[in-house]
Image 1: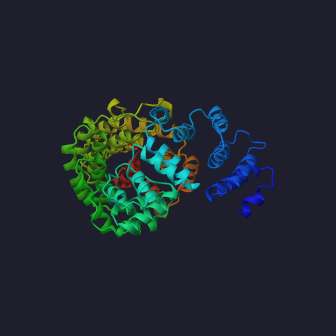
Image 2 (image 1 turned 135 degrees about the horizontal axis):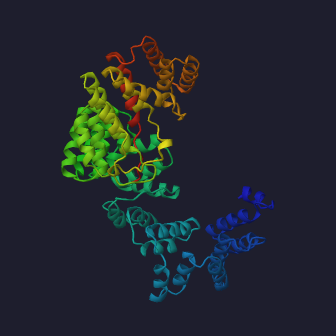
Image 3 (image 1 turned 180 degrees about the vertical axis):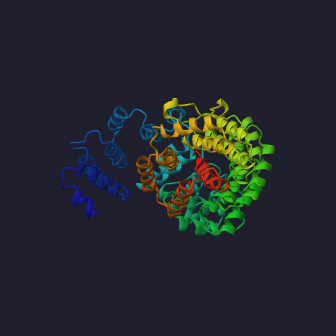
Length: 484
């Protein structure tokens, strides 16, 4: 209390400090002092809702009429749940019950009841807290709170068999509730919910320790997905992803998580096996189809990837780039393969296809002047060079040197074009800009090797084609982040 007493001496903190002191006095049963400090909290801050609530609670506990205080809160905040509940508490008839519950209409109504109940508990009003929770639609967290407040073994047993789907506790006040439940019954649900609280606080080590202790007992797929996301051990992580898929094979997110796990660890055949099998059961689901395309790309099955993507209809969303980037990756890799097979005109056709913006890929075409085609133009230049197509070679060389796009990704290709065109000053300036943007030593080394190949005039050789694949792969290095 001393800290709040000192803070109450200052103008800027007086109202907040007096509000907290009122709470402490009410919690300790010193209601007269609670009234005194609640009134002080309103001096110079008449619309302090929390102070008004404490004034009402302290006055009510002293059996004083405080309806005027409720009305003041209602005037400031007509939708305040506290006001309607207190009227029901004072006169628990059906009319007041309906008035309290009828205005809690949001999609997470459970949180309204839980927040109000925890507030009552924080000031020692356990009876009110229990009553609020008894009226709640309820979920697993609410069930544990009800058991904790009443210390009722039967309610705890009910909580231990409740459904924890879509229950994501985050309040610090729930920690002792779940710890009590773990001590009393040891059910995995309370440990899982406590782990989620720690997870939300970035206490990953504590969350993982709790989840590891539950072993393989839980029959709940999200438990294993959560533990896998925290688990550093690759073998254990894989086992958890596989367990989640086994428990709920119809949920696409779990099959995707296992697929991405294998892709992260370069186990591309396993990744393809998982997502291919799942895609046969989940038809016309574009997140699954795009991940299947990625898995096919990782396995260098570009023809199959091209066929799948052509039939995929991606729902547009803000910032979407996956569809067009996957198409470019596939088409350009196919072009490189055709160059190796001396099919240079076919390679040029594939590169032109890479420049298209099909509507099914969920990405709108920007203005032509802001589209960066330097990678496509360079590969077209190389294909024309290899095929002896002089007119097309010159056309694409001029497109490269004339490009005004100044993003760093393909500056090295543009530098090479200026070198071939005979302007070393511009070539060096662009190369310096590219090297300055690179943070990776491997990129620096590969860039220098590429410029040496260009300097020897071997930029269209089979060896040079190996330099272009990593550039193409950067197109899909990052996937779009979707919330759903």
